[in-house]
Image (tube, one colour):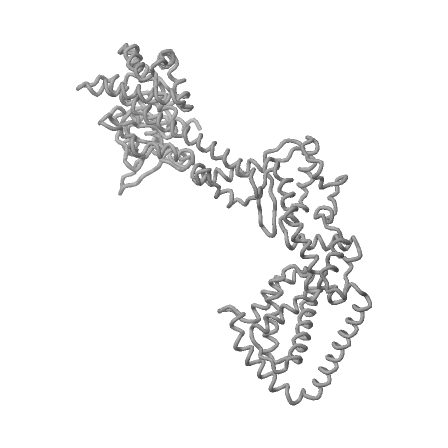
Length: 631
């Protein structure tokens, strides 16, 4: 290990002496062997390089290459060593004592007596490229470690490492400015010159100049938190110094150094000022976003939040990035203390649907949705019960409070899925409990009783008996007289029975004669209208399977198949019955739509949630039956 370190140190010293990172191996071995012989008498550790020098050097080089401390390059028969860190070590050493070099310009290739290949450094023009480079630093993009900055107005060049930007570079500039004020004794002159631009702020100006002379490195920190006075102070100071120096035909070393420093301070002053302005705009934009979240409809998707705009219609997303918005929302939904929910809550709707609501607006949102849902659900139940009563039928929900609550829950899920998701969300109780602890809840809006959500009928202000009474009022007058209603029902049932018997008898007598002609006519009619229901590029069977998958959502495969088969059987019976009643009727798309709507009104089918998909399935299955002639 000692030999390896020793060789690396020898290589470093050799490159420094020759001012080049490239070492010819043959020449180096010869020099090393001679040098070792001369130094061995005074320093015995050099004796290891006297004998078998070439073998030992190659052996140690292989280890250094594996550790990425150097590289072997071959050009024909010649092999040379390239020392990776030569240029960076040289530049780093040049900035080791920035206070001592404050009277000299920044390091460049001339002062360091080196020539760096263009592919080993990044070239930046101060006025056009530097701001973009500073912005890219925050993204941690891979960069070339050596940076060459070209200053304007023939002010020279600066070599610096990327890790020294901006802090070390700015510190060095401040030290050069302090040296200039001290050596030229022009502090009072510049202070008086700037007082014209800052009337009434002589005390602040004096403090700023004293800080430059006494604590110049603190000035760099203050520059990053640039306020209005600091920004204008540095802007006018840099302009004043540049104006004074540019009047001279020949510049001293100190003047060249401060001119470079002024350019660096000026560009960074503008950059930090821009950052502060952007930060203020970003903070104001997020405050505006907070106000938007406090307004109806209270519940917003991420896309809706990203589309917020201010009072002038200007999108807020321009003042913060989408990544910053996502980080803001992530912080709002995760930051919380013990027994206190985050400020922003998530509401999940359907499969993968996600919306956000402020905790303070969670209960108002629930109240708003309940107010909107009550008339819809009452109307749906009323319509359902009127149809049942007209058919002289009843259902359990009309007589049982328990079944009535189930019916209300079913319609809540179908008609207002967002409200259903909120009522089933555990966060609703947690928000309610937290507000109740803080005594910030309205007594008239209590959703829970002893930790249990109150029944749907209380939430929706729907009473079973009242709805049933309303349904009866909407019926024809004779339904209110049991005797008359019974007679009407009797004759209606009698008529239906006769029609069924007639259909059965005529079916037996005329089946042989009319089945063939009738089926052919139906098939021809179905072929003409099938394109109306089946999109181009799809088949009838594919559309049937697709529609069935949407309305038949039972998890058990056998139960799902039985449900589909029952629906198919119902459709076949109703189609057969309808065709017999209107034997000479023309089969059109309107006929299919009307028949499908009537079938869909069957009470058992009305309980299926996706009524739209069910209607499409009924229409398609009717067409399939007619095309196959199996009716």
